[in-house]
Length: 424
Image (cartoon, rainbow, N blue to C red; front, top):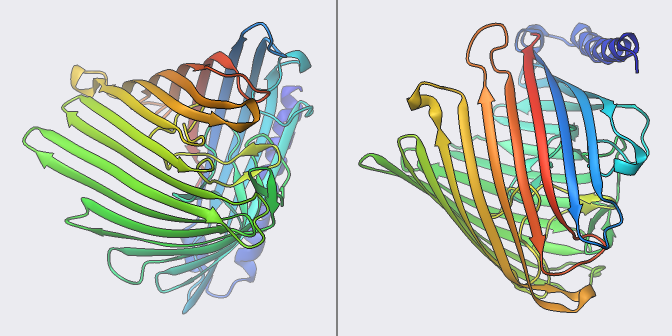
């Protein structure tokens, strides 16, 4: 794609979104808050990934792609009055810089896609007091449903979400999700899946209460992937200063079973997860412990060509969540912040995760093992014209004691450069 054509597509995306915003503003009564509180951010994301598959029976030796993404995030304020109306929109344009059919499969772009892809995700929001109803497309970041953060394109969900903070320190959530646009797709997929079964909706309610000077939080959640599974989640987080140290913990228990017509069969799952940290100056040490029990893997929403992001489990990492049936896993992690050494913005993270007792039914495996090692190096520019420009190198390895069509050993390198620009 030529630079001129790329610029035309980006300009077209911005023009369409801003035109919609201005049209809504001009037709809204009491539009001062709508326009005055509007925020518009453009993020440039350059993402390169090189994954080398290991073994003699792999279908493809490498997956190598390089893309440039432009993400425009528009968040309006609200019109005045008891009911405030607003609109949010996310526009994404992705350009393939390098890659071929023989080295595809990084999930940076849709399979067989042209050299560029684009998508606009709009949503209308209504606010009463401290309660917000949002209808349309959105990025989800809840313990029972998260958008996948692992690639350049944002995963979005379509549905209705309700967030209320009427009671001090308590946030209540409810919603229904009907479709998702994955990290490697420009379309909305209404097939929400788990265990090979398909549902047309995901319902949830939950609440999080903060206390103890905001150092402690307890969360309670209930989720339903209709006619597939029900899931409850109890979560407790706590941060405790202890002299020069700061101790932290994030523990939780997921309970899951089949729902309705049980399209994925009889399900029973109990997943216990805990991530514990100790911070001293520039050093932070982590230990992660996790156990999956019952006759199924940890329950999370997927779609026909991928899965939603993890992040709710202690041992979720770059390539896996260590959430297979019967799996036990542990993690050791060490982070180093170079700010106290005179290099603010530079951080390094190392971690190793190992799981065992894995049951892989389609391969007849009853005691499989897997492990992953990761090294992250990140630097964020602190001042000047390129302030907040972030460069991250992620190096990882994955090893398994079994082989399936969807599981292989590999070495992976990713280089991610992002630059946020505030337009309004």
